[in-house]
Image (tube, rainbow, N blue to C red; front, side, top):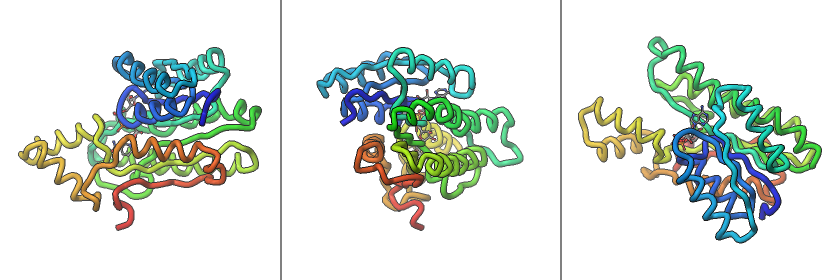
Amino acid sequence: MFQGKTALVTGSTSGIGLAIAEALAAQGANVILNGFGDSSGPRAAVEAAAAAAGFGGRVGFHDADMSVASRIEQLVEYANAEFDGIDILVNNAGIQHVANVEDFPVEKWDAILAINLTSAFHTTRLTLPRMKEKNFGRIVNVASVHGLVASVGKAAYVAAKHGLVGFTKVTALETARTNVTCNAICPGWVLTPLVQKQIDDRAARDGMTVEAAKIALLSEKQPSAEFVTPAQLAALVIFLCSEVGSQIRGVAWNMDGGWTAQ
Ligand code: NAD
């Protein structure tokens, strides 16, 4: 489906971003990975998906810290030099920190806003001119149910994700007369390292097993009582990036087991 196109997925060495990268490679796209930690395993997984697709899709990697504007500029320069630019941009990198407003560490607030929100502004402003020139572009911002509703202890995350949904709408309006679309997806609970930490913290805080903490976390917010999977989210991203998705613009599409229906 995306043969000859290049996708950048920020924060794709783990979790949801890695699943999206694999799915895009399986559809024939060149994929540029980004993120922290050991990149060799994720890279091998995405290369295997590209090889299985059989379209000769290439896989690149750039270790830009998405909280630093100059590093994001270098990442986009790398994509322009090595891959003829970015056709599909998935702004996925994100972090979490849980604390009440009055106790919220200022440096955590700044980091969450920078990584979860401002990085999408930088990647978008840097990639849009080339997308418009080619008259093709798909931008998917990985927001959250916390882009639509709030939870206690998540001031920075909720502010950043609501901001990302707003930014998505403005970008969609500004590109409405082009073949560039911009949408957000809003996952509920997905069992990734980002959520595992919250489960472990809850187990320690409430003196329960990790398994019991997992069930408590799900039953509190997610009516299905099941986690959304990275693969399900990746399939939604593929749909939004496809030709069928060309008139889906500026939505914040939740996949949340019923969380926001309540
Ligand atoms: P994860 O911790 O598994 O992955 C996060 C990725 O971001 C990793 O590759 C990490 O290296 C990268 N990253 C973190 N800081 C970075 C930085 N400064 N620069 C570059 N890369 C950085 O988390 P995940 O659950 O897969 O989360 C991915 C996205 O999905 C995030 O934006 C998160 O807010 C969102 N999300 C997750 C859930 C969930 O339940 N897991 C729900 C809704 C939304």
